[in-house]
Amino acid sequence: MNDRLQTYLRHKTAWEASGWVLLFSVLTAINIATAWWDIARRGLAFGLWEVVTWEVSSNAVWLLTVPCIAWMVERYPPAWERPLRVAGLHLGAALGLSLLHVAGMVGLRKLVYLAAGQRYSFGDLRLELPYEVMKDVRTYAFTAGLVLFYRLALWRWRGEGKLLDAAAPAAPAPAASGHDKMLVKQRGREFLVSFSEVEWVQAEGNYIKLHWAGNDILLRSSLSAFLGQSHHLFERVHRSWLVNPAHVKTLEANEFGDAVIQLASGARVPCSRTYLEAFRKKLGGAGPLSA
Image: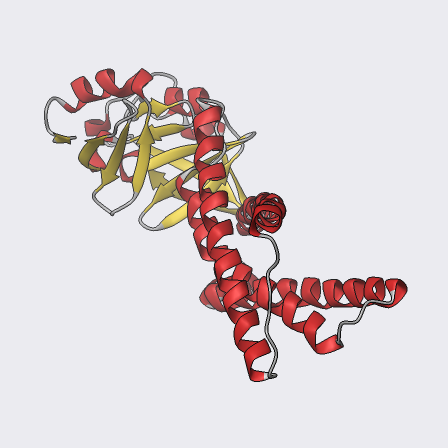
């Protein structure tokens, strides 16, 4: 891992926060310039301070929702299996955040106008609220897309791993034999990772992401190919997820007939109804199921 990447990862949270603040600051400045230009063209009687108040209040409140959007993307990533459900969850989150956004920005505007000795009016709620909600849904989608792009870019910067052919034995060997390790080559370095230490594997387009001991590595492979190389230590619990049963702590059912798997590390992984019963049998009753 190069020095720049190590420095970035040490201050990752600060860099991410700074990046979002910078992005929304630039968008705010552009919106202010555009709105003020439009007002000047039309000869409308608004002051510059009012335009600044509108745009700053809107973008400041929306900026506060970014952690919620990032959590939703992490918790419910795009998936080919049951895409309508995932889309519905994100749409519901977008609508909820939109209502919070409208309430927050209107509240801030009223305070600024009150301090200026004037009164702020949002307008006809029946007309203005649907308009704001449509804009907010687009902003939510744009923000979620940036989160996904950033995650992929960061994984690629960390380095794309590769399972070397020499790491895969000619015949599958049981984990107890001591041959459950894979040789990973990443950024010119080679190191051993035990399959048994990997908690979960997630499909990411043409890649899979492996997670173990708090670390992630991105490999160009498919879930099916990885299953064959890992001596079947993992179980498919979702079209896009594999889980190591040895790390499972609980299995919690939900009202949709699916479940959420909680691992010993605290990570949570979705389990679709398609694989739920087979996975429960694999656990052999070791993983408690709660409604």
